[in-house]
Length: 226
Image (cartoon, rainbow, N blue to C red; front, side, top):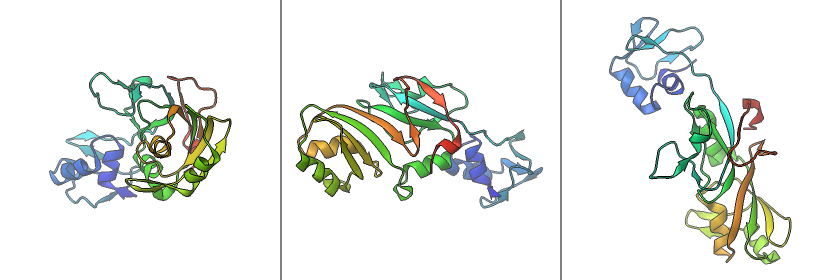
C-alpha cells in the first residue's frame, strides 16, 4: 500500500505537492470513485487509478549510469547554451540527474525516475559515499592531507574527507559522503591547492569502470548499494 499522491508522483503525473492539489480538485478516481482525501492509501497492483478518466499505470523505473563529460551541467532544464546531461540518455522515460557534479568536473552521475532512491542518495542521513580522483596543479604536502581528514571549515560547517589516498605527488583519491556544492574544490581551495581535473569514479556501489566521457549504460537497482 502507498499514499495516492506518492503513486501519482512516481507515475509521472505531477510532483508530490501538485498531485495533492489534483486529488483535492476531484480529478482522481480509485476503482471508479472520485477521491478527494490526500491521505488515501492505494494498492497499485490491484486498484484502478485514473486522472480525468485516463488510467494511470505505475511507472517502470530506469537507472542510467552516465560518465558526464566536462562542460555538461547536471540539470533537466535548459540554462542558456549549456549542454545538459539528460541529452546523453534516451528521452523516454523522462529521468532526472541525482545530485550535482559541477560543469568543470567529469565522472559518474546517476539519472533515474525513481524519486525515492534519488532522495536516499542525496540525503546525508543515508551516508552514500562518493569517491573522486583529483589531479592538482602542484604537489600536495602531507599536512594538507591531514587537514582534509580532520576537517576544513566551509560556510555549511566542517567538511571532512572520509578517506584520502595519495596516488602520486599531485594525484589523490578522496572519499566523502556529505555531498555539499563543489565540496572537494572548496576544501582544497581553502588549503591553497588548485585543481587540474576532478573525476567522480564511484558512488554507492556504482563505478565508472571503462566508460568513456559521454557514454551511459543501464544498470539494475541492486547495483546501487543504498
